Length: 466
Image 1 (tube, rainbow, N blue to C red):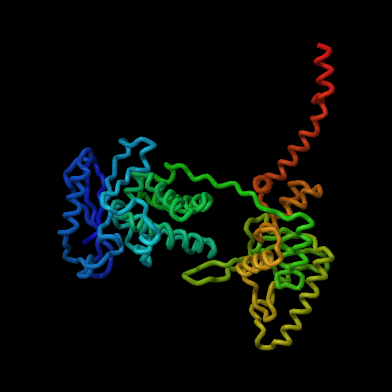
Image 2 (cartoon, rainbow, N blue to C red):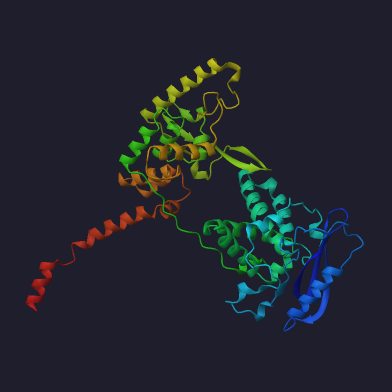
């Protein structure tokens, strides 16, 4: 049985069928029921089910529909059919219930059901030659993803790729919504967000980024006049969760430093705690960034790890997160001494291990005994293991950066100077992340005028005088 769903067009139910031809290419055909939307949902659904059973196309793949197809449910081989109510007949509260399941398939799609449609996406080079009511949104997202590949950094593309291929594509592949469907019923995008949060427990911050992906992709379709408006602009953008990091006090940092003495991560922990360096900045630190004469350490190169085309890859960039992140900091005596010893040790290891020593990362500071670059993922994992082994308070490795900011502020450093030390693009970023620091300013403001308020003795005297 072929896949199919109902769609409203000009007030009439249309039946949209989807199948694969002998070459494995996805094709769709539409048929009018001749039925008006109001009061004909069940009748239109029966017509759709009958058409799905009887439909044959000359170019249909002979094996298509014999077994459970990618679009079909594992329960009974029947695709859910949908009654789509015109948007002008929907109240705001009823909008999320506009897609009505007509079969016994539960409305909440389980993760294992999503896996059934999680096929390897194929890029349709002729996608834009189709009318928008035949362009599946899932296929369009794959097309857009490939179109931006050469214009974004590898790690950025990897983030887009995971979100689209692993989460957005399977959901909308199951639903078979077209670009026309989303343009007419923007709430279908909100339904996806609700599904992700309820089924997978995705955070609001992640949904915020998914929304940005979807909106950017649809803006591309709008630019080339495939759609007349961007449906993502018509739904409420998810709000990001406010995040309060855990930080270490001076005494807790001392305990941490002692726990990492002699550990491969000792230098990384100190760089994150003292200079507030990001993980990518620490891994990307090169010997040329250390000026032993001028006593400076320059942050200008980063290394990240990303899944690119199914493989984990180190992504090296001669630019930091923002322009302001490219910064020079003072090389204090403790770090100068530690770095000189590390350089001597690496030069000795190169002699001892000979041909076994990697020459690929000679420029980098954070390498192991064989000269191999320390991977970002190892830092996160190993930090947690040592922290827990020594029964230290739970914080993330990145929270050492936050601990640095807090200690700077506690020692009288202004927000502006903290901004420059951490490499934030503007002071608003620093203030937004470290709201607890701003709160201390408010306490100082309160103390400044608190002396004007009458005490209890003064209140009693005032009452007696009156």
